Image (cartoon, rainbow, N blue to C red; front, side, top):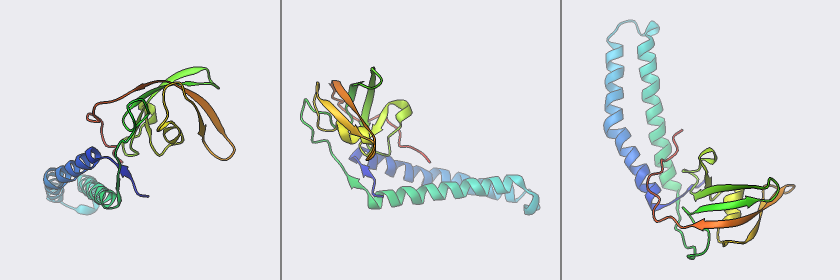
Length: 167
């Protein structure tokens, strides 16, 4: 799947790759060497743990590099009164009779538990481009959906401060 990323996402991913290659890789190689020097490798837990951590770092680097190669760069083209990328939206859920607040973000930043919904998610897709007061149908699948009313749209000046989700 091609990730949709902002320019800021790309910069943060590039910075993480650089840090992992220049800092973490060296530290992990040293940890493997140190653990190897402790003797019999077949019973050396420290060696196996160090190798596993080194391999995890290398996997993360490959994953991020592959993500950047296939990424689609997205920008917010929403009007001043419309829901757009990195905007905070207060919605009223008709079924639950509850008010919820979300921030619309790219998929790598998405974290529904922290109120960050992806532009790829059903609610993210449904809200984009709508205005305060709009009643919006959120289609979850072919058999289920629900209505929400947009109560407030807060335009966000920047997207900085968010972490790229780590796997």
